[in-house]
Length: 270
Image 1 (spheres, rainbow, N blue to C red):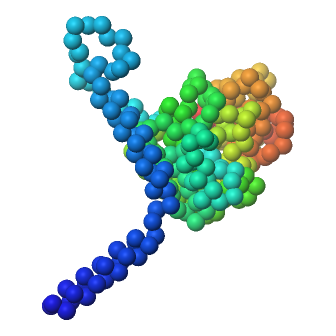
Image 2: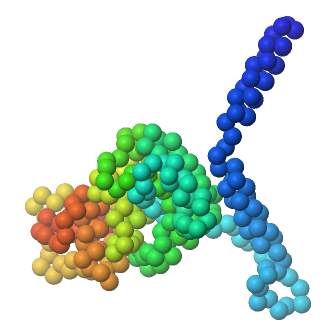
Image 3: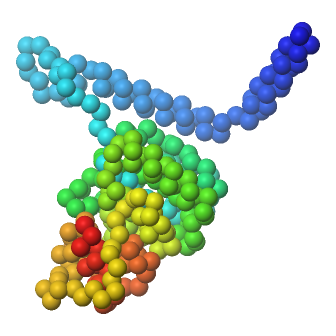
């Protein structure tokens, strides 16, 4: 028994030694992360808040409140050449960009921010009447330079993560969208190779009905339909391109009859 205990202690010492030989390369930025979180926590604990307009004689805190929750998921591709490159980019203060999750090609998921905190991933964007997607969404970056197909291991991890987020926050299926959808004049990610139909089959996003024999009504308005789906149509050409990239895996410019049928079918499916 004594020999067993000694052996276990030696094994534990070896494991600790191995762990100590592999320090976290992000220890410094993790420290900065914790510091920022503590600062936010300190702000939330102020009664009344430092920027309060309360001029009453005493603070009256309501008992009916909760934490804000995400209602959208925005999918991106990183447009970089490796997962490590993206992780480094998201830990440099000067870049001012981030995401809640980064999924590597091998399926490894890195959560970089608490779901309830606001990441800098959407930028200037609009979906429906929502003009501040950063404040209401979770950003997921897929390691992909924008010119390649998505690894099956990566997609499987994505579907697992999306299922968790959907159930945890009760996110509507229609609110799983792409960066190119919310910023059509600026972004094209995830690229046209992303399998949106497969995503839909897993329970996320929306899809169109069978277009066989489908004929849009004579008064069907392409721009209005795009707007009803959620697109910002101030740049109609960009909105059409984004729509075709998402629902047809088509990177060509301009509306055609096949695209119009898909758009009409999608509108009927809403």
